[in-house]
Amino acid sequence: MIGVQLRYNFRLYPTPGQRQALAKAFGCARVVYNDGLRIRQQAHAAGLPYIKDTDLQRRVICEAKKTPERAWLAEVPSVVLVQSLNDLHKAYRAFFSSVSGKRKGPRIAPPKLKSRKDRRQAIRLTRNGFSIRPNGRLYVAKVGEIEVRWSRDLPSEPSSVTVVKDAAGRYFASFVVEVDPEPLPETDAEVGIDLGLTHYAVLSDGQRITSPRFLRRAERRLKKAQRALSRKQKGSKNREKARLKVAKAHARVADARRDWAHKLSTKIIRENQAVYVEDLAVKGLARTRLAKSVHDAGWAQFVTMLEYKAAKHGRTFARIGRFEPTSQVCSACGALDGPKPLHVRSWTCRHCGTVHDRDLNAAKNILALGRRERLNACGAGVRPGLAPAAGGEAGTHRGAD
Image (cartoon, rainbow, N blue to C red):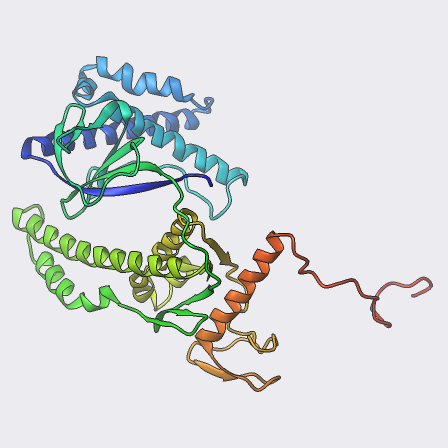
């Protein structure tokens, strides 16, 4: 089996001096990215050819360090600047691939300038810019040895690390490591999952997972903190303290949601050999009156966890097309009963008389569709056999007017 690349996140506790050095690195990385983007935008506006990556790096980093305006770029590790420019190159390649149709999925917009007011800042370093010392600290070039709270051991040597400062003022190290597959014992169980708001997930075996609604439960505390922030004078230290309090409250909600999703996804992957979910149009649902509940559910994060954990543990994972009528088809006889409004939670099939719970029926249909696609991928014959055309078919006949 092929290895899987995963990210392992750990909390960092830099000293005040190290925080200042990291802030300088965040700023320099942002400036290099914006300088490179402006040069390419100006060249495009002037009708000049696309600037090569190596030429851009020479102008934005090597030559810029020799000028009085950008001499301070030499105070941070060069690997930080190079990786920031590589991010710009990747953003342009993704944009061009999307415009030409080579990249699947929604259209990608061209790169935008980064703002120094962004609350989340990050830098990326490759192996020549960091190391893990025997004392357990993370050494970052021109920053020093940073204390790390190791919650678990790294499975292999990391190829890169991203140092992140989030909106709540917390620092994290995100390591990219190659993980060997850890196949779990095979089981005969397979499950289809219907995601929703009333119940977070309804499984085809009848299990119902209640939605935790972390954001809804924390709304009262968040409203109080946000109201206090709105009363503070802009630019004052008290406003910054209030903003940090709001950010920490949101961080607690996000951490609780992530932890809950990890536990649920691990449980489902351990108990089932194959997992099938519906590919929901989250962006579309987020534009409706249910937007807050949709964002609070965090379906995309949960499905992503299922996908990479299935790959790691040798399980099968598949997404069912979002246009499949899983709520309209009878899972007992296969008859299409037609669309139903959201307030209809149960219905009776007009063909076989089976009474269906809307969500459980959808989960069973997702399981059936997933099995069909899996058998088709394995080479099984799932197409119906050839049959003679019925008499009286519509068509064009010789001699017809």
